[in-house]
Image 1: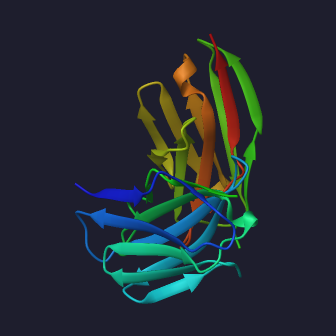
Image 2 (image 1 turned 120 degrees about the vertical axis):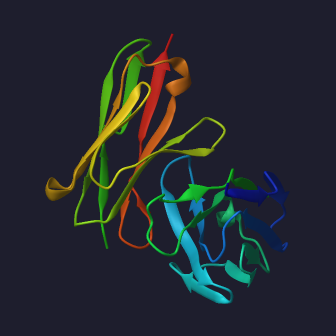
Image 3 (image 1 turned 135 degrees about the vertical axis):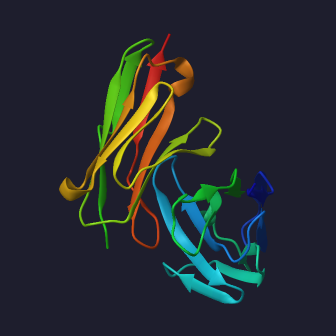
Length: 114
Length: 106
């Protein structure tokens, strides 16, 4: 069966520090991968999605970047964090051919920038 | 892009009551999902239901794709049902509604 792992679960980082959040999927190949952010406990915003290795699409201009170095690995990064980057970050995956099973989400990373 | 609207935004129930959550979407979609976000933030997939009706225990969902809405029914609610319920209607990239925050009181 497929599983998605996301870490760390919580993170407190000072303003101006770098960020690296990692997401990996097991039990499937060539998934679509996504990064979402949720602020203030409601409303999920799509940040990035990837349909293959090295292919990243960005939904909104921001201080963050994403990379997909391997088929089942998706990384969210920042060179210098801002206070506004605080939030709950969720990684998700879906099948590329048809979406009969929809999206499955990781357990999330709660980021606080201080 | 597709707009997803959920109602009501907030709902408070007494344990044992039934409820209906609604999701309207602005355009034809091939995919629709209902999620429950528990107090720890975890998003749990409840139903993948682009059309028709599905049931899972006390929960059921119906999507009428031609009329662009979906309903989530919760029967005999329990305190563990509390949290935010999200609807996502999409063709390619998933777009979420703002959610319905459900509080079930003992």
